[in-house]
Image (cartoon, rainbow, N blue to C red; front, side, top):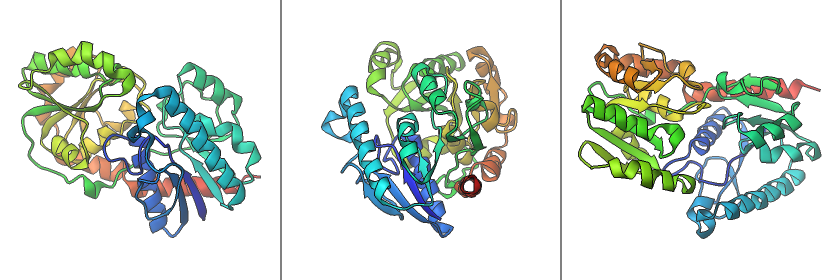
Length: 347
């Protein structure tokens, strides 16, 4: 198949540090090429890929001057989308895979090629719900069953769990004795709850996280005053090597999320290293963590504290095996390939 992959413009593919969607697009693209497909990647010019790269912008939007201005960034996304559509109207593909969400939907009707859209974010955001409902018959792919609940009547043609290249997350039998937090310094990711868990258990917490512009005030007021660099340590936004080291050597990854997490790539990255996860029962968590086998699914901070006392009951090899069975990039690519073939048969 001749496949177009449309990546977001926020980060390069793959991202140098934080960036879940771009990382998934990278793994999917590389696996599809291994399977013999001809893939064209629409992304920023600082991306690295085995596919044919069509650079929409020279560099990722977060890395350029306007990156700190959210309205300017939104404007650039529209400019980028216009460039993508212009190219797609001239090129011939068997299928177009949209990873940039709702912004692409109004233009599907003018394209001759069939489009599938993977929904990488939550579906309970007000204005986005309205837009998706305007295009209910597009071909949608969820990344967890729970993600579908706010808009169950959309035309879902499949569910594909995110996958990772597990060779880049080596398993480690023995851990250190600290707790880890990984992701974004935002209220929905639960950094404050992670700190509360650490303080109640008197265990060291190492936090690696991106601070978005919209979350800076929250971080400065709620989180930074609690960082003492002894028991609560913040190491900033990390690249792949430091992330693996953080996860491999952690006793547990804490994921006390306060939102409907559509997937949570950090959860499978941790388990691939052998590190169990303690997570709040929200969103996709029950689909990703095997309760009492690869971690503990809890309701609140107090339950998380109790679960930490039982964490040695979790076999780190079971965590690794679970990811090998369910969440590899190879399995993800195979599942997407089946959906492409199914959609192409539709009239």
